[in-house]
Image (cartoon, rainbow, N blue to C red; front, side, top):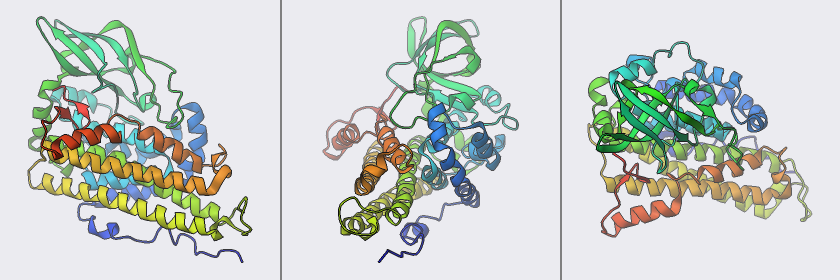
Length: 429
């Protein structure tokens, strides 16, 4: 007899995370999350084509602009929504359920939270097109990487050149931020510059096994070009800029201090993976109830005992991951409202916790793909994209489990900690 599970019984069933960690989920966060859920069929329908062309469609970018996605972390004073960690987790999760690249380009666009704390003249220029631009106002490449561009001091600004990799969302961004090693006489350091895309050349070098639609090309300038002083930020001043945000702007996003702000980025990262695992589970249930197994004599894959065990385990793994990430989102927003911040040890342990459950999401997806067998590896089957994209996301330097474990382990064992920024990056301030 064929399985007759009611549609969605294992997918939409509420869990404790639906209520326990919702105290900082705002009406705007709910609205944008719901709007993305309505767009999910379109996001999924376009995913294969987006992979081929290396970026999301102009149509989808226009829809995301319409619902306010690219204003989520901008200051209210500049037309943004200034949403906190719980809200961005909700939004990232919904995007991940549709397509990982949509979630990742939102993550990069959400760097508005950081760059909006920079000096006023830069911020004024950044938001000049906020009411007319279709897409993210900014994208970034190699902002904190070990290898960046270079900048040398000249009157009224800097002469810049270099190569900035992984500039996700670059085709649709109004500005590009990139890291530079700067020199000014005998002084030197690390900085960020805000660059016009027209000053850069886009390399067609984003050929990867997953996250192909994230538009993460390298941007390059082989000849020096001028960047005015107003579009340069010394990374030594970054903590001061971020910590000054609460005195400049309203909104929960700008109450978070330096480490709380960086932990929010990790929340956003892993919330995408949670959404991906949930989207994968949705397709898994659908396919298990419509496909015949290769070997055991059951009419449907869903009737195999191994499928039922996998469904139970995968659901538990995804729920556990969501509980951890929403717990941290809730804690970040609480500490922000109290005017506090986290210690380096707090941030390090939070990062390894979230990296670990991100890996748990990938493990759940791999389990489901394994149960479905060879039918799941066909490029015509959308479920395989979740596994490929998840593996690429977790290869990001800020998410890799083993290095983050070592960094956190030094704190936990009482050893001298490494000087890190955002838990997994070298501190260039």
